[in-house]
Image (cartoon, rainbow, N blue to C red; front, top):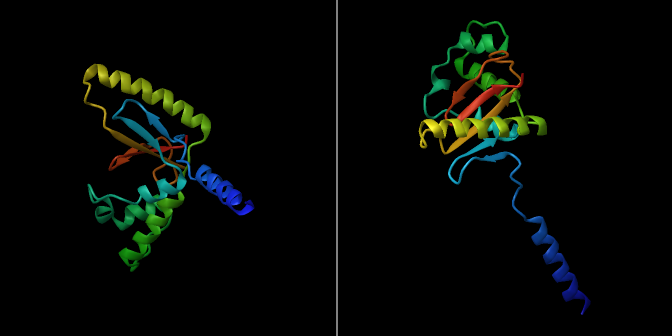
Length: 154
């Protein structure tokens, strides 16, 4: 009798532990539009992806060296520098703290309402936000890559 009770209890505990992740990082604006605040691991993956515009195929060694704050080394293979650059970008991301999440929630709800006044279809279905420490372009520089908006922490 004791073994079945333990099995049932273990099953219940397992099911309770398999709940879906809380939606802390998602700002739902409408049934079809939402903003995703990427955590540092998701952001590190997203910041080095660009299948749309081919940024990483076009960026020049001098640009990478300037962004990393390193002197351009003559004779350095482009692939080695590219790997260092991608790792540098990945190390520059951070997650959003609760205060930032609350502010962004308010700002995006307001922006969504304003956009809907202009054109109900203007706001994209998904926007992903990446927070950086602003080491590669500097403070105050916002940019986009695919469906992401990259914003500095300041």
